[in-house]
Image 1 (cartoon, rainbow, N blue to C red):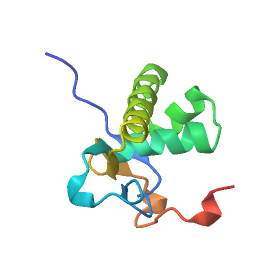
Image 2 (image 1 turned 90 degrees about the vertical axis):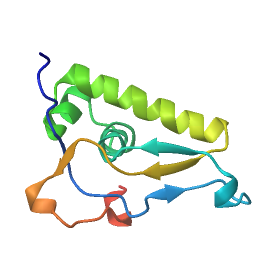
Image 3 (image 1 turned 30 degrees about the vertical axis):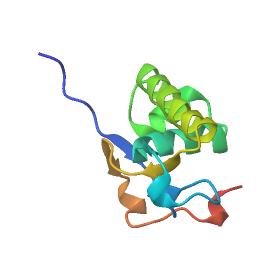
Image 4 (image 1 turned 90 degrees about the horizontal axis):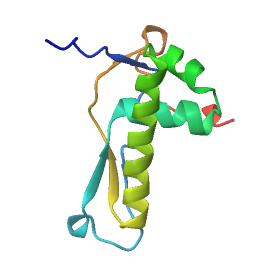
Length: 111
């Protein structure tokens, strides 16, 4: 029997949970679903430029699990951009970090 999945620790939810190509009606779009934990992986690695082992530590997961998570997130984002899909951020296997509960990302975090 496989081991149960460990919940990934995230700092907060994104300010916006839906992104779409300009000039295309929402009803005409396919969606790429990015989970909150995949969003956090992108934020830590690609926005904050942290090393993978540091990112994994912040999310309370192993480095190989983080690597798989970031690859999946990047693939979904690339698919959405190349194929003109909307990106919807929802769900995932995560827990909000206690000291940041209720916090949403803002511009002041984009240093």
